[in-house]
Image (cartoon, rainbow over all chains, first blue to last red; front, side, top):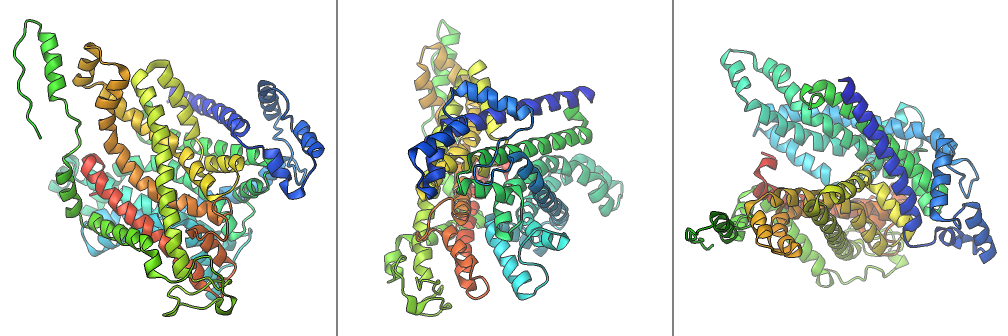
Length: 307
Length: 308
């Protein structure tokens, strides 16, 4: 088990290093001059643009820029926002909790409701509940999350007044965005759990348990569920990634001060260091989330850690 | 389908086996007639197919279904609710929403196809090279793919938009490029399994050039899994484009792209719910139809992935 943990942690650090390198080179090698895009709003003179380029070190050779970038990262320096002049690192860290809270809450909602619906859809196969839940899940997989968010605002905030329309704050501000973002994970997970449960319920050991007279409830929750959840664990990592990416849009819909909204604003204003910093940060959080899921997988399924 | 004749026994059994393998080699996709029959038997897929035909038909017949120009403003008729004259109502510039949604459908469907097309071309190139040549080429390319897939897709898309600038065309390109890693992985996987087939070994042994093996023997096996993912990918691309346009990073107003219309309606949610509602429904309808068809294709081409 120890070797497995060490191997996975090392692999994650390699991926993070790769991510840092790829983000760096993508942002510098893609066509388009970010400095002139940044300055279009201000109708800046050529000398001002040249000064900004010098400030950002964009005139130096690529490899020099890369090693300086790595050195700064090692010191925790993600640069300074061109517009606010605030350190990117502190801006990202101050807004990270709002995003993490949303991503965790929506993944949790997705997992809990998805698993429960999936189990009962499998247990009551071909019933009205099964057919209806699978149809509704298809709808939710097809709906854009920002539209679901706006519908929730219209119904639950503007009309019923149960929740605030927008903002970051306590639990009240988290419910609507988390549920809006969680609808797709509920839909995806319910379908996967259903398929997985049906596979497991076809296995010989379930037939044996039934022949022995074991209660159906015990078969479902005691025997089948544990095996059916194994592929679901991998999906949790994917759904968390979806939630992190989805937070970019949902935070804009609900006016939450998270790093998703920070990233969107940075792209809109062409704030070079802020785009780089926020994208990198979200990517690193995603890699760590997948590492935790992989380690969990190793704990639950012994075949993985000994392979 | 022709039945291959058994080759004559020769003095060199190895060459005989190789020749036999080449003669009997066929890609493993089902006949198109059988596939179509299977598609229509699945009720979900049939419904999806009908919805898709209705959608494409409506979008193509837009000039016949509406007399209004999607960009024409008319401040006297602004913010009117759904009516016979304006089935989806009007927005705050008096533009007919039924017309904007119909013409927006053309943009979304076209953008979805182009984005997926870019992803397939880029992904197939990388996947074919990585899978066929193997060793360090494969390792390098697949590690790059792993890193690109290590971040949520929208972030990669946003990096491309950041560099290219926000517009409908750039959003299409960005979504396509961001999906290249996914298709590279699928194609590589298919190439690896096809490469192990006897007929490919046989072709290598008799000296067929690599490009010919890739094009004639390996690529046909790649078509099926790519087709399944691409169909569902078009739905995903439509959703991504709508999301980017909603954020102001894709299509720009006054373009009648569905995400732009949803965004237009956001400020008027309380007083003019129809702007956001019908445009969002259009997105959901299109993506649902495509997902239903994609599910059916997956059931045909890979029974292991069947949802039932």
